[in-house]
Image 1 (spheres, rainbow, N blue to C red):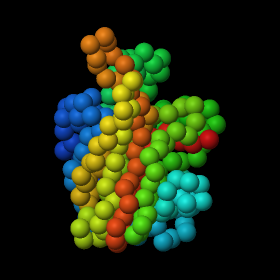
Image 2: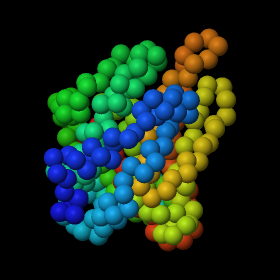
Image 3: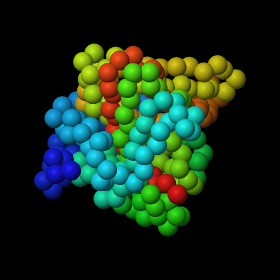
Length: 244
């Protein structure tokens, strides 16, 4: 994993320095997701993708079809995480925690998140959620990921990030990132998020607040990936809570 080594967090710092957080917050409030264009350079994307075929550095491999999750597979990283993945997890967390805290207040959820990620992980670990959740996903022609939510225990951070590591139209066809939103007494609404190599999407894990005429209410979200028509598609997922 030496190809992903950071110098004192400079790589992650450079990747996150130009994020327009007011725009991200506005998009999350309006849609439940926000794009982070050009978060990673192509060479960094390719370096992370290349880790998939190595045995070291992962705690488990999941074949989706065996569990009814879809088709394709993914691997959970083990601790210590690859430096770039770990540093991005740390760097993205504070601004997302600020948004998550406001969301919980608006939804009447009596949970607030600490300002730094290490403190939140301490909370997870004290509750027995010890296993790292960042993961690397691999799809090929015919694969897809069913709509789902990444809930791994009592302590769930309500936002997560997925980074597309492959180039649409070049490395693969199809494979769009899809979100659905279920509002009370309404049919589900779907959104397709266009991504290029190195782009990320931040999205709600489970619920988000929506302001209505009678106050704020919760909507339920799920995410997935449509069928890959050809080629190979790699994605890295950054989940901020650990698993039981």
